[in-house]
Amino acid sequence: MPDVREKRQQQDGLERPRQRIHHERRWHLNPFERHLVAATGEFVGTFFFLFFGYAGHLMVLDLSGLTPGAEQIIYVSFAYGFSLLVTVWAFYRISGGLFNPAVTLGLCMSGRLPWARAPFLIPAQLTACMCAGAVVRVMFPGDVAALNTTLAPGMNLAQGVFAEMFFTSYLVFVILMLAAEKSKDTYLAPVGIGLALFVAEIPG
Image (tube, rainbow, N blue to C red; front, side, top):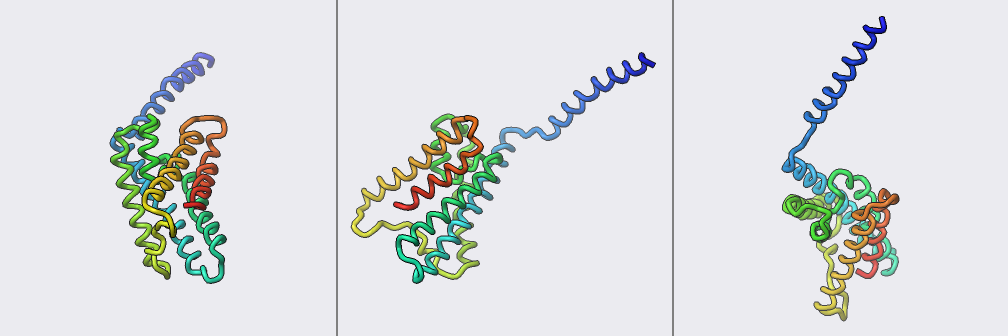
């Protein structure tokens, strides 16, 4: 009896690694397939982020007669900031939750993202942006063109360019420090990223 048990244990020990290897080979993706998965995740994630951001922004403008200007800015900032927070938290394991060509380029330049992936992610992000705007235009009342960013009265083009540069660089910096630099609290990075967009949206 002991000999039979030993043989069974030896056979199990040989078969289990083979099963694991077969399982790993079955689900292995080549680099091109991984890029496609990441691009798909970026498209869906960017769409959700901007869909809820645009819809919230449009709702605030629709009710602008009931809310003062300062409160309107806070509500719009909440819409985009919390939409980004939740969506990044849901998608960062799939594609990284970038949702922005500027963030994609920043991570590529820092060496955290391979340059070969950028041609897949950036078109997906831009296409998702247009699709989200089109769906919001069809589903909700109001003028989607009113959501476009314009210069404030008394602000010239150069000031607008530098302001946008600071807002975007702040968001990219927060992403690099909270998500790209791994630490024990990296899993909370989406909270900081969403709050960073909320802060940037207030003056922007």
